[in-house]
Image (cartoon, rainbow, N blue to C red; front, side, top):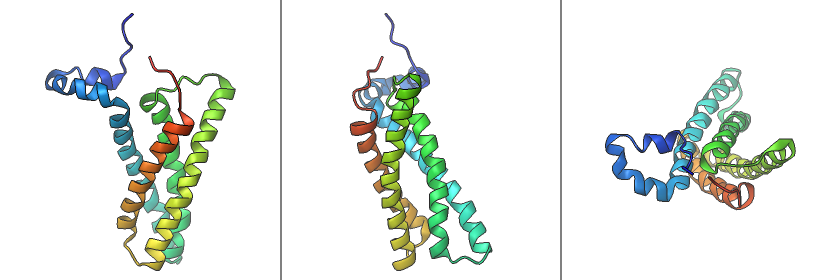
Length: 163
């Protein structure tokens, strides 16, 4: 029986990319996690700026506006991350309403923990230490990316069989 190939497996079969295929196959989960982690970070950055700008225009200080802006950013980024992690990174086989709700709850629960970590880092960095919000966002995003992988691998998508 032939292994089912997703879009990323098929891309690795294109032309010069074939030379990277053994490395890709060996490290697929981590590479896709980093790829979608980068995209999730982009979603997070984009969705941080708009509410931050609107709140500052309304007269809210940058240090105060960063907290609700970061929460909005988090909701958008985590939703994107759940979908991409479920489908491509960890290839979840959860099915049925109960299993999917359980998996999603564990995913969002883990992300709530890292939301607290990220929000505290943003607040301390921007409000107390005076670090530029974008530099602080990069630092916090790296910490959160690592923590999220560990939580997803050990607690959310653990033991899910792959093709």
